[in-house]
Image (cartoon, rainbow, N blue to C red; front, side, top):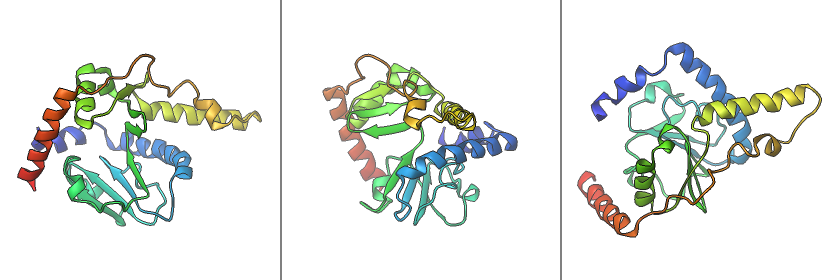
Length: 204
């Protein structure tokens, strides 16, 4: 499957669609930038073609992906090719001011997920077991499209002379699905912990 990843990803969007994604991400990053320290390094995990990292302002811009996508990134972005399972041994510790992952938002209450896979309970149970924390789902699976629509609504109110605070625009759209989160199973989490340690040793 890893061998087929470049072909699969390259066939998902044509150049017109890639350009449109860049335009959407510029708007998203325009909002997120207020939470990013421009004087500290930023890391974009699973960066794809760099739709996020190319628009962010930071002292250093780093990106990683399991595929070799360096040719799509700006020249100043330092690219690290590797699986997320290996990044701990490939990146400096305590170095980044902001670490960004599209479709996955970590917080003190667990992991909040969006995207198509968020509809699959089996995948979410594996995520909870591997990460050893609760997993919550968002109602909306296409986070990028929702973000673009919310930005458009915000701009529409602004242009009409009835500006709304961003918090009021997004209220109710980004909340986790009601109900208990998917929690890690201690016995399964222990198995994954052992396997991850073994995998890390074998791939070092």
